[in-house]
Length: 212
Image (cartoon, rainbow, N blue to C red; front, side, top):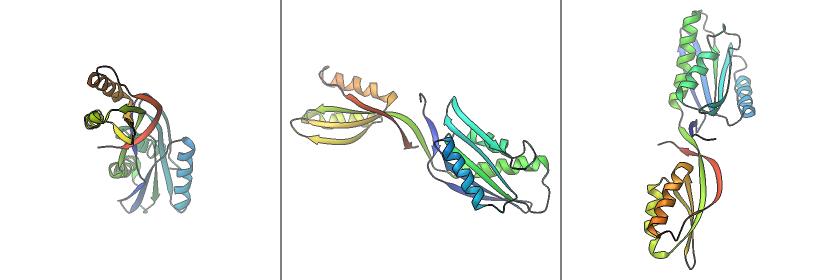
């Protein structure tokens, strides 16, 4: 993954009433296609008596995504595609939504269905708490005691996090940075120590951090 993107942090549910039809939208984080399919199956089982269980999901983010939608018996293009369009526009990746409709006895028409499924998806998209999936470096650095506070400030200034400090002859700091911020920290550490110290990357991984 080369670019970070937003993901939902929790599962949310919102209900929308349109001319006596109930639209119950459920959105959840899903990291893989298998997770998305399992979520869709779970919600459809929960609302097995619904008239329709319309669904959509986006796995991945940025320019590398897998998308899916289903109208589940609604007229083509009036349900799943509008839900997917809202997901696309939300900036979320790794997200799945199911809108369970209980028919209220009044036909909504093509335009009415598009509007109802769009609004239902927007409700859960707006309600969900967001995080950002980012690639991070975990690094270690041996810091002299007299530089500890200055290095801590440098870590914070460069979007980093101190994961641990081991006190011995020097202080071995375990640090974590978004990949794009790590080199700035390295440059500042070299400048502070006249090139004598630098952090060593011990692991690179993906992590979800709460969006601010």
